[in-house]
Image (cartoon, rainbow, N blue to C red; front, side):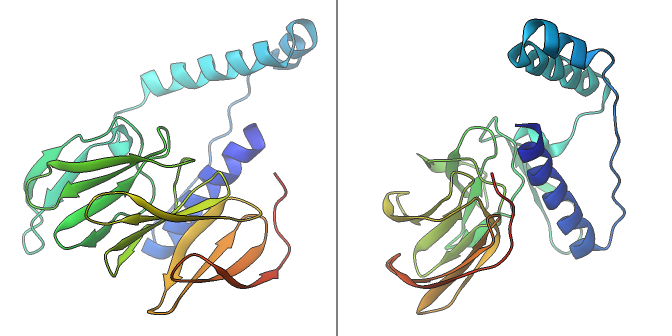
Length: 212
């Protein structure tokens, strides 16, 4: 729903603004007669109107890197080395790097992919249960993928094969903390989870969170 989408987008936007010390803003658009449409034709029609409004706004905005484009830059000069578009989905979470593979998760298509860090060529793709806008972690030949369907996935870094999955009480957000023996993760539902490296629950704690 709209509140759910706002929580995802706003949380990501302002977290990045704090992390990179850059300005951020929110623009409010008033859609005239939306309540009338909802009352007369139902909320599905109202949702269709909102989607049409967003589409019109996007048509007037300049293109952004949310189209799935991957750009490789030279670290010393900042010059572009190569660019590819391995996925149509928006990529919001930070990718992870391991053994010259760049691991990327998408927001729209629930797709995970491994891309060669030098050439941009896709080495494998894998569907996960839900979209992700959280930061990925790759360590010890495993990629940890937090997703918005309340599931955390562990994928084999070389093949993309799922090794295990863990279901929490809400959407996994932020970057999981991974140690040689444990994985610590948080959800929008206010849960803090400690997992073993095999995905088994060690302990959990509950704080105030958002209910979706």
